Length: 569
Image (cartoon, rainbow, N blue to C red; front, side, top):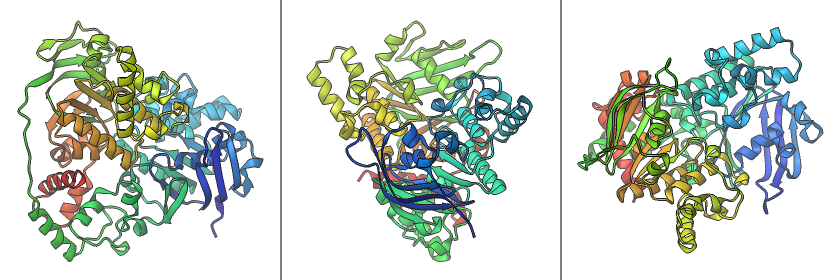
């Protein structure tokens, strides 16, 4: 009989600065060797729950606790933070906040050093952990200089370097490209199966997590557990969409077509899903009925990257002869594996670096001599890590900062800030300190701070990272509305759903080269491009193949068009 490892018994927690509890009477038992996924909208209490498990509550985040929480039978109130760290290995959603060492090797070894391991033992354990997550060729580099995905690998290695009872992952896919995210889930699966460790995953990207088996899905909302079910029991319900969580795309497609999704059809993954003849017929009829409409953009060219090459040093070039153009009013995505050069392109455009060769043309003129300030008047950029942008203590002041710096009257500042905060789902928190926000909420603050300035071109690096489906949709629909008003939007993203649903063109980078410039549906149905750029074939395409449709690529385009129209009615 499996032993309980994590036991919440009528457990509640209220942060010291909050008027109401964040967790309400939680009753939850997770057993030895289980792999459990915890999902829910932003602010529902997922991260707080994980912080209670690893001891950050109450040792770092102070507040009032009631009820009981036991780890391996011992009350956590009787354990020190050091004792808890020996039981729980944590990988946070914000890698930068977790780095300690000056090099990757030092960071992975941090826990081992605290336990006074001898150097030879540490070197062996660090080398093994680094190899597992494919970061062994970067051991001497500084963690903060790595790409977002590489940083995530370092934190994964740090969590797995020592033998612990519980592996706790808080948004492990947030900074990873699709293929690397898939590999990360396979890695977590491999470690869990090999070691039989209790594994808890907190993540918004439900479909990506379900690439591998999970025993249970815990759904949270407003500090409460609203469901605790096996994947096959949960997916047929409408609870996910009602709670603000994105369903796997193939589940949504089945429901659009009128197919009844049942637990017996094994819907937890597209590869295990059973599609009966009746459902096949419904998919064919639905696909035949829905017309496909595509409108090409005939607007004038606003931005051109002409033969752009760049390297941070003379020995290693990051970008090689990159060429593409962006038309006024475009809404495009730039995708590719971690380290492909996507974020570097945005830094070149903003003037943080200069190309080693080639030209950037904006509105018909070369902007090489324009300063960062001059470029910022027409180009707004939202960085991947919100902590690198935030400079004020309060939410309102942070969003108002740019307007005040431009001399906008205070009455207009208040109106514009409140308007943007409402759209970004932050208006109820307008008087809050930023320190009280989750990573995903901080992300929305930085997006709001740039959107309020109404730049001509808006660049967003991973705009939906850490966002639940409700806030994802609110932000993207707001961006779409801005786009319709004429704003040009460039999104650097690993979110294939975003690419498919909201952008009409996709630029694909691989090893610093442009390998595709096409619509998203074509990109995610081209196996050669998918393989080179570390993308992942969409489950819509797999569903169409499984159902025996004659034109799977057309089915993907059809779904995207229908889904856009359905969600904006």
